[in-house]
Each structure stands twice: as structure tokens, then as C-alpha cells.
Amino acid sequence: MILGKKIAVVMPAYNAEFTLRRTYEEIPRDIVDDVILVDDASRDRTVDVAKELGIHHRVHEKNSGYGANQKTCYREALERGADIVIMMHPDYQYTPRLIPAMAGMIASGVYDAVMASRILGKGAIQGGMPFYKYFSNRFLTATQNFLMRQKLSEYHTGYRAFSREVLLKLPLLANSDDFIFDNEMIAQTAFTGFRIGEISCPTHYADDSSSINFSRSVKYGLGVLKVSCKYALAKARLIRPTIFDFKSTESLLNSSTNQNEANVLHTQTH
Image 1: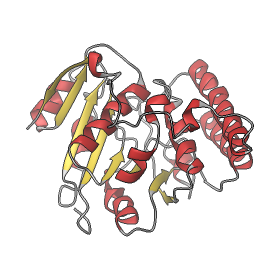
Image 2: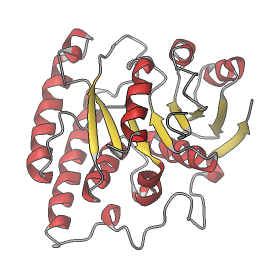
Image 3: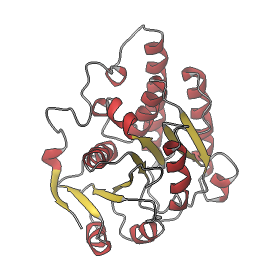
């Protein structure tokens, strides 16, 4: 805990057998109260490693997508009483050592959400980020800042922290089950006026780091631009997209049906 706030780390996992242990062992358990892994029907030993480490985990019976995985992650954390939830990939691309700083920025009441930015500083290129990913990241971020009137250094990090209030407020069930979920969630957070902070984060790209291929990257980039345009039009009250409809869309804990429940095979608690 930090300042009486229960801290949970959630890890959306897919084929993370070889990096999960290293990631988990660096999580600062002196302040982290709960670690949750959701496996999206991995084809390797990810679940076996989670069992060996004693990680509370859930398993999707079939592959449902990165966004669907996160929905299960956040719902599980909220149901287990988390006040601050930190989402990080179990592929060791981001260092868990920043968890105390990120959680503290929210626990102190200064921010409602915190993004670990690979762009602040010089960590991205030095950490092995492919050049085409770096430049597309910078282009998309600049475009999003212009359309959304924000000043974030990066919208595409897979290392983020949210307060319980944010997770309960955002209509996450309206978001995509694919990779664009991340961007929709950040856009929703900004749309509501929640305070978003950033922290500089080194990154480590390796052969076993999770990533999407070039064609899916192009699809993701177009999706990002679409989300930003929806944001701008919704702010101007010209349209009301479902992802920004906070009144009629059910929240994770208030939903009458769990759209992911049929895909969850079992829950294991240690």
C-alpha cells in the first residue's frame, strides 16, 4: 500500500513464458498488494509459470484480443478491491521498478492516471525501438495532441496506472477488443478531464518482446487517427460516439452481463 491505497499490478499475457518470471521478480512486493495475470489462450507455458510463481490468474478459453484481455484485468482488479491499478506487459519491455513512483503520483492525489513514456528522455531508440515505430509514434502523438488539445509525450505506452475512480468512470466495455483499446482508453481519460501525468521510462526491445507486425501497425495507426477525430468531434458536440458516451454505457462493475465471462476458463488464486 501507499498512503492507505491498495495497489494492484495487472498483466495481460500472451505467450510470455520466457519473460514472465523476470518481470514478476522485479515487482516491488513491499508496496504492491496484488498481482493479477490474465492469459489470452497462450500456446506456451505462460499459465504454468504463473502457477509456479503463485500469481493470481485467469485464463481465456479462446484468444479474445489484447483489449478484451485488459477488460478482464481491470474488472478482476476492481473486484479484488484495488484503489490503484498499474497495467504492464509481462514481456519485460518496461521496468517494474517504476511502480512505486507511478502509484505514488496517484496515491498523493496529484494525478488520476500516469503514463510511463518511452519518449521522454532518450530511452526509446537506445532501448532498441525500431526506427519506423519511433517515427510513427512521434507523428501519431503530435497529431493526437493537435486534435485532442493535449500535451502528452506518448499515447502508445503499454505501461500505465489508473485510479479506481477512473476505471469505474470510463465506459471500457464500449472499447475495442483489439490493440486500439489502449488509445481509446487514454482518449476517454482525457475526455473526462481526469489529470494525466507522465514519467520517463526506459524500454527494452528483445526478440521475445510483444509487438505487432507492420500491417497491424498500419491498421493501428489509422485507428488512432480515427479515435482522435472522434474525440475532437465529440468535444465539439457534433457527434456522440459510444466510447465517449459516459451516461448510457455500462461500467465494468455495473454491467448486467460480462462479455468476457464466456471466454474465461478458470480462475486460480494463491
